[in-house]
Image (cartoon, rainbow, N blue to C red; front, side):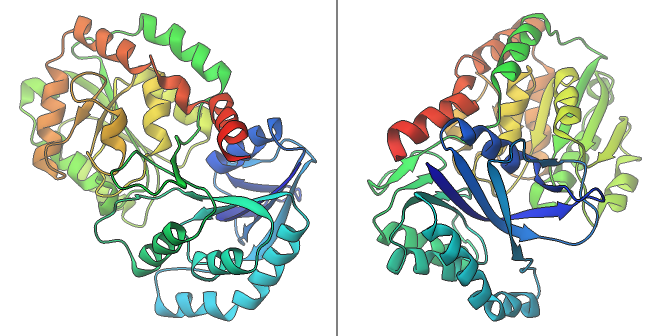
Length: 374
């Protein structure tokens, strides 16, 4: 079977000519070769140096087809999407027609015209993957339009979470992020991992911007009592953003050691999960971040916002902590609850957390594709 995937995933060309793309998406596509014979990924090719998290495809049976890089926050960027729409649609049309199935990954800027094309003119079988927050209260206009379109058409749509009044063609799906080897390594590590005062390590993984809550995290730790701060050995910050150096300066005044890494490879991020006891993500809007499941696999308890589908998987004080409010105060209170855990309670929570972690594995995801989509 031949699959064509259409997405906004950033790709880059390395100096040796190899195309690399966002690691999480590329890894997911690599594993889809267990279901499909050949895969074509129609996505955006950017200029510049690839980040360390970018990965190559593992097989010649995966073909990359470049779309012009479009999009951005400015009005002129959005107009650029419409100007290049005819070229993008021609590429999509050619590749989808040559396939047995398509997958369109929404929401994204090009979705405002690619989704209608696939709805009204695409005869190839396929489905849509909506990776954002399905119940976002005030989404951008383009995202709201795409969700409305997806609820009105007949093809299957995979979404994060299980919701009341969910259309029958919208299927609840977990985002895959763990290999079989990851699961094995996690089981071994969690059985031995301990939480000791003065040795506790925390981490944050994501874009360094206010919407992701990095400012709330820094302020929350600054607000801890000295005795509570003394329990924390280090806070690992993985990610990048325009305000990175501002956050660096703020962290120097906290009284706890912060280490900023920038963007890391998947293996390097997993190594941080292995030594960390909790991942803190006070984000205002998410679907279900893959980093939560990845961290839990290594006994790194989630301290996270109760937004979108996160609360469907994270149960307060059972396998993690849900923030009572998405601000520095709510983050501080959740960290304090975590710090009070005995080693025994911490162990029970991490063990509880990995019982159903298999639903975030690539083999499980592929079985859902085979049984529920195709």
